[in-house]
Image (tube, rainbow, N blue to C red; front, side):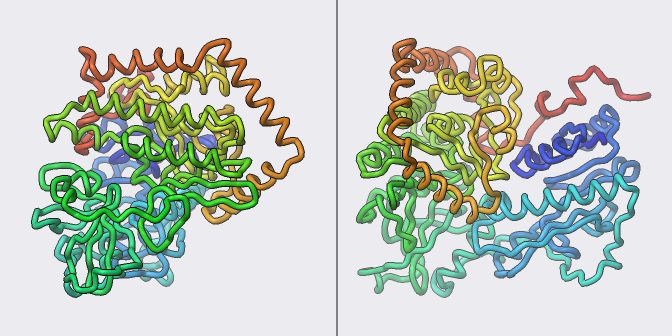
Length: 574
């Protein structure tokens, strides 16, 4: 069938659904829900057999749903209605939740049901649950709904659905999210911040200054702070602030001051944070689940795993430098295989655009910070490429984009969890050229023409598709726990393989031959020459695109590489 995806943004769910539907042989085109007239024009141009709306922030106009079957993906169980479905479920600690695919009608979320899928609800950030359980359930339910529609089946009226447990809930307002730091215990604070993570955050204040807070983590130890009252900000570590609750403390990783954009908490309140005591970990080289830790190391049986949990996968200059230092140290450990495990939701999305944009708030230069950040990313990639004594594995449990994809490709092997989405291109950010040695790493895997196609087409890759074209080496289990177990098993098998010494020798020989043919320094200089134009040249496209990305500007058009119906020479029927 010809299926139009009508969506607010090309987010991870929309990408997964588009790939899944194309994999079933359907013809897909995408239109951003900008205005009624734009959506109506897209429908007239594409003439879809079916419309699927994976992510909307307003109702589909009657002029469309009255003439076309429109499937709405609602992140709630059958009967749940309202715009804050997942927020309410997380804040109230519901044990099970789901995704329902229903048909658009006049009453929001009240149309007949085409399919539904339920799942256990983790006590986790809303953004994490959305990217994992909600996305997987949505793909399952949408594929089922599309099959039913294609088979000329009819949906079930909501009133006739057996055991519909959901109910109408209003938009969750900040009054329902508000934290009472004197009375709320740590578990309650975590639930409230988790339920608002990503968007809209919890309206609060830090150091007496109004802000929205995000990205909370528990803290188990409070030695020496028992006499402090709830709400007191008591310490800092790297990018996070430690704040007292009535029975403990939580780390606040990110904050958004009024009129600004989301930033690491210690950067959003840099002046105030500077007066707080620094509480470094005793050693980042061991995993400590009792506190907040963005870089951690563990090793066993000749295998080491380097974890880096960076919010939304963005890697600032300082984070890149710290991770490079950690990797250099890991290479001195008695391990034969190093697994770069990344984080739960993201492996890496490359340079930190929000931190770069923040340079303009402090009379600094976003161009200079961009330059520092990309060089720090390059230094990290070089540290990974130059690892002749170990087999290195990039184990992608979460999504990766832009420079993060090529940082992963700097490892010997790339293993991705089934369900992960890769966006190995840069041009969507104002025609950014990109670096991280991609001009060396990518053609070696997919060939010159394949590399040009990836960069030109700017389309996401599923984990399976990445293996098919040669970008990745394996697509492993889709379940997170099963993926981690599979990675550990395979890594240990590599470490114990009788031919490991020969593999490492061959790796060093290949690297030496490549270096003799063209030094890595030459690739880097050629890439950075292009990046210098992006950052400092007369064309401001990168800076404009970054500004709109960071400040969440509403889209004014759908990119042509997504809206195929606008690039095929079709005309609106009269």
